[in-house]
Amino acid sequence: MIIDIISAVPELLISPFNHSILKRAKERGLLEVNVIDLRAFGIGSHKQIDDYAYGGGSGMVMMMEPLVNCLRSLQISRTYNEIIYLTPDGLTLNQKISNSLSLKNNLLLICGHYKGIDQRFRDQFVTMEISIGDYVLSGGELAAAVLVDSIGRLIPGVLNDETSALTDSFQDNLLAPPVYTRPEIFEGSKVPDILLSGHEAKIEDWRYEQSIERTKRLRPDIFKEE
Picture 1 (tube, rainbow, N blue to C red):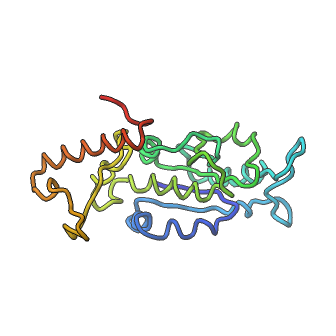
Picture 2 (spheres, helix red, strand yellow):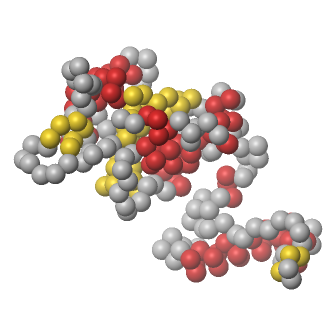
């Protein structure tokens, strides 16, 4: 999978993709992440990428021309399955969206800044708009990092145990069950006996029951009776 990211502040994305699971995915040749500096396509000697909004008001708007020039230069070498704009008014990211995007080959992410990007670019080129929550960030870079992480870990071969992602929270509209590790007893607090029983079927039943209980209690909005 190839994920290209257009950013006005590419330095913000240096660290997230160079550690842990995403680093492993890149080293294994399963994921390629490229961060493109939008200012390289800026206008004039000052490489301008933003301007005042028509109609007045506070805040700047990312200009159409640099974005289009950047996009067209990228499209010379590949075709994108989705062109995604990270924006607070987009579709709220969930596990279903990440699952779907992990099956794609080429994705382009566009990080907004200031008051956002010229609406004409959204109308003409963007195929999908995603938000990571009902709040506003300084720019789309952190949201892009979240999206790439949620997608990248689902690519077959990235996780050492490929069944691990299937038991994550939200995969079946359920939260994950509680987990425990050594020591068996710590300051009087003990691991549930069922997890020490060695009876796999009963353990799985217990975990499923715990997932249902936790989801009902903590996230009744996503719980669905079967």
